[in-house]
Image (cartoon, rainbow, N blue to C red; front, side, top):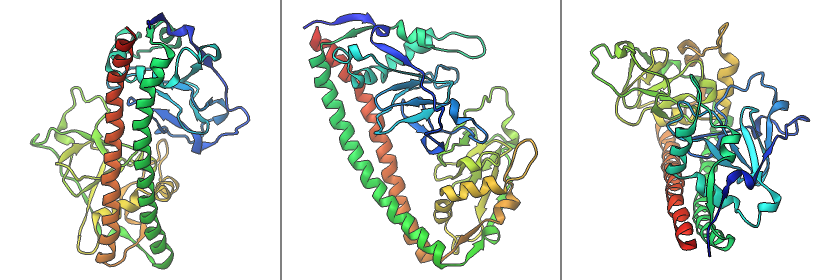
Length: 372
């Protein structure tokens, strides 16, 4: 056995098929994150022309050629779903050439991309001034060593077995979410909804003494995380403090899911965020309320009721007018317990995905060493 040394461009080809007949809609739009997963897009799709979006068929690859401010990683993914998805025209879509399918396995190539060495190579060779890029021509120019097809197959089988186990766990996870959603729907249909304004209070505590340096933002997955904003030279004394058990949301992006309950240590968020807490937790549980905030119906309602001229915002007065069914505290706790188990298992599932990606460099190295 021997390694086949070549340029990647010999085995891949560009795809530029657009959604011109609008066969695919908003539910089919995906973005690519720096963990190399396809994900529901975080972009504001209001007014976007989906006929210009590109179609990514199963087995094809897609990447964002912008590499600036991306955590020193390259956002590239493979569509391993059973149906096509669509992505912005700014992305690059490609596939393995028909003639190379007996030389290069798509799964092996995806594992090759899932290595820190590859990320470092791309970031080092990106170019640009204010924005750096790594383009299609750059990807094609990558020199690669290919093991024999049988060796690729051996290590791909190991990878696919791990992915199959993770996906089996994920399917059980969705069953648990269905139980939780069923309880919620039953409450919505059989209980009168109440405005939550009498249960919540806005908090406006500032970081005036610079006592907290943990700067966070709220992403569209309803989680706190390190802010993506450039904080160089900013004065954090005007930032708002969020304490454990309090909520924070971005009034301009809440319709995309940017609202979260803080369950970790205290942090600070941008002054533009709104922070609030539940006044009486013996009548309303934070976890129960967060469950409602995570529903797509709530996100759609915030977009509808948001006000503003240049930028729509959902202020705290509007938040107080939100209506949810509020059952007795024991019922809330029962539903929240199921939801908490779901969240815990969801986090485990995400850790499994990361661990599988962490094994990719080992599998690639194993295939190369065996071929030598």
